[in-house]
Length: 218
Image 1 (cartoon, rainbow, N blue to C red):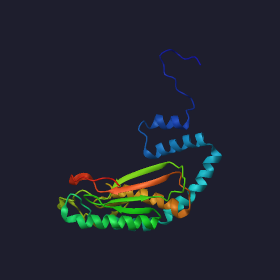
Image 2: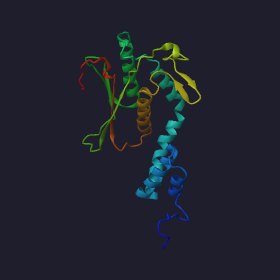
Image 3: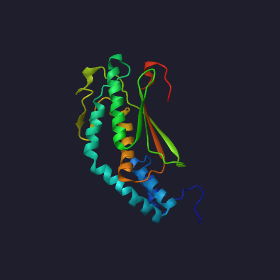
Image 4: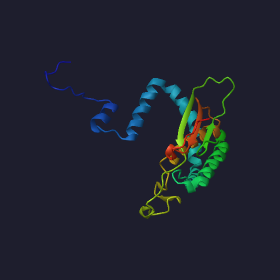
């Protein structure tokens, strides 16, 4: 196609991807997900993508149906004042770790509590078949939280979760209990629906090294 030198070429019918990029230089998270899904379907093929969607539907349905229970369990998790920087919360940290162990076992994970020179480490893993050659991934997180002070800046007690709309206000709701709880619920949905995981997963939950005490991973 001939065009005057120095003038940019503008397609008369840009693709859907091009339209997103033209009208939204900074893509939203939803747009990024849609674009990634389109590319994935092209690479995988429509038939295989449909099969994958059918398999995933059971997982998605389980997550939706159990959301109220997940929320209640998450609030129980947040109520532990697991502040590793304060020695007076040592028992709270141990109680939180024991709660995690019991919770992971209910999900169907092989779980153990590992003693260290400081606070215990929780190790949970999906059952691994004999001679399994699946890839093995480590999901790392911590169950301790930052000190909540200054308390006068809180509109509600830091260890009594307050739900306002779609936001949960509590110490640790994002860093890091929220993230690692979401990981556990995702694995639970696969295990409880009998949906095969494409990899083996091991979770490590520990307190941070804020206390400056030496420890060793088991």
